[in-house]
Image (cartoon, rainbow, N blue to C red; front, top):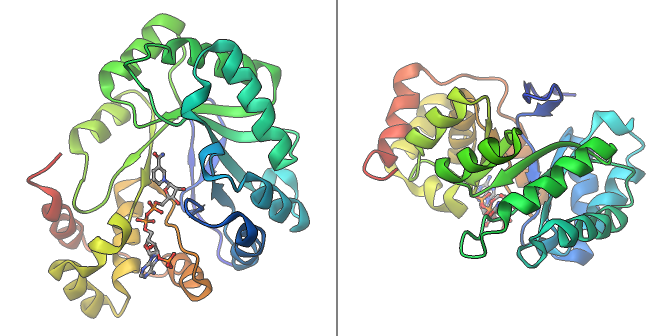
Length: 265
Ligand SMILES: NC(=O)c1ccc[n+]([C@@H]2O[C@H](COP(=O)([O-])OP(=O)(O)OC[C@H]3O[C@@H](n4cnc5c(N)ncnc54)[C@H](OP(=O)(O)O)[C@@H]3O)[C@@H](O)[C@H]2O)c1
């Protein structure tokens, strides 16, 4: 079985660098899909209260019979649950849907700056971590100024920022900020929902390496140091997206993929 490399989160936990995202996986199909993923070797599953499939994720993880600390489960606080008390309640709901004693990573799904409540929400996540029901805490879709505010007002920096990142949006400045602050960059929409697989340079590299376009793009993410969570509801693609540890892109080829996003940060 392939063992996925992991990254170290600043609070000390380790997170697999490749996982399965389950956005738009119907609730009724989630348990079987996640079960297949785990049997292939996936050890990171990314869900959210918003996706309404936490229950299936939790069932599959529990049924897999792995040691609890051999699988890494992320879920996210929904947009309607900002604020300290609401966030604590929302977490408890997610945890009971998942049926787990603890969640590995809990993220604020969106900052919603117009509400101006994300700092209070963050204080709730800090408490959840102190209580031991969440191992690591982070955010999603945050900009540097918002990350600065969390650190300056609470003293706690998110372990992870999960953001849209793919060859058409390479987030160079944000990744540099993350690196400077010991924040792991996690890429959502890593395949640009399929659009990245149709890019000419990606297709050319697939031919050069004898790999599929998806494998080229995922390899590019891994070599940038991103955690990456491609979604597929297609069983054959689960395996395809996992078989990315037996080759390496040359540095020039990494740059050729990055060049696709050079005009947009
Ligand atoms: N934090 C946030 O705000 C946020 C936002 C969006 C997503 N996310 C997370 O990131 C995960 C991934 O993002 P995403 O689902 O938006 O987009 P994505 O992973 O870039 O793309 C998923 C699409 O690509 C297709 N696909 C997957 N593997 C393929 C392959 N090997 N060959 C060809 N097509 C392939 C899938 O089709 P099939 O399923 O039909 O195979 C699906 O249509 C989500 O599931 C979710 O966990 C987070």
